[in-house]
Image (cartoon, rainbow over the protein chains, first blue to last red):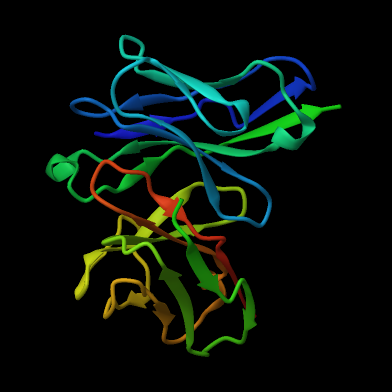
Length: 117
Length: 112
C-alpha cells in the first residue's frame, strides 16, 4: 500500500539552528515527492519537489530536501531556522495507481514546526 | 504558480441550508481537486476532476457533490449542511501528470 509517514507531530528548534522535518514513503516505482507548508488559516503553499536527478532539492524560503532511495526518505531541511518558519509542514507522494495518471497526492499527517526566538 | 481562487473564505451557516463553495483557476489546468481538512490535521481527497464533464469521488466519502462544466471552474455543493460538515475545504489544480498541485487559500465552513 502506498503511504507517507511523518513520524513527528511537532518539531521544536531555536531560531538560528538547523532544522529537519522527517518524511518516509512507501510507493511502487520511482517516487514523485513534495513538501508543502501551511500557515494558520491559509491554504497549502508548494515548497519543493523531487522527480528525478540530484538527490538534494532546493526550494522556496531557503528550504531544501534530501531524497534517500535506500532509506525511502525525503527529509526537509533548513540550515538556519527563522521564527517565521513556524507552520505546519506536509510531505506528499504522487499516487502511482494507474501509472500516476490521476496526479493525485497522498499526504502525510503533517508536522508542526515551532521555532523559538 | 497557479492562481486559484476560493470563495467564500469563511462561512457560518445554519443546519439544513444549501451551500456552494466556489473554486476557479486561471491557468487552464485540466486536473482539479477538493480536499477536506480539519484544523491542523491531515488532508483527505473528497473529489477529483481530470477535465470538463469528468468528476470522481475521492478517497474520503463525502456528502458533497461537484461539477465541472468549464475548465476553470470546480464548485462544491452541500445540499443540506450539517454540523459534521464543519471543516476547511481546499481546492487545488494541476497541469499535466507529474507536475505540481497548487492550492487555493481554502474555505472555512462552520455549520451551526
